[in-house]
Image (cartoon, rainbow, N blue to C red):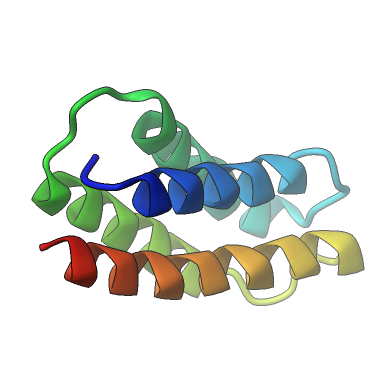
Amino acid sequence: MPTDDVTDLVATLHSHLEATGEQPVAPKESRWLGEAEAIAADLRYADDLAPSTVRERASKVERLLAEVEDTGSPDADEHVAAARRCLDRLDGALEEAA
């Protein structure tokens, strides 16, 4: 990955999505969140990903989170909102690193 900022944002993104798995989440939303968390984990633990690959996978996470409406858990909803903010910041960090 290009910069420490991107690495930190990806780690934070993954942590928020991972935390949703510890909450009682509606089954439909759980499916989207589980897939988003798996992609974020791949981003977090993969070595030497090109910025274009990071951007593509982050975009997939963003599309998956767009499917999540109400998890049924206020704590999970907060983590989803935080993950969305991380994605916004990640996009900016990738632009700066380009």
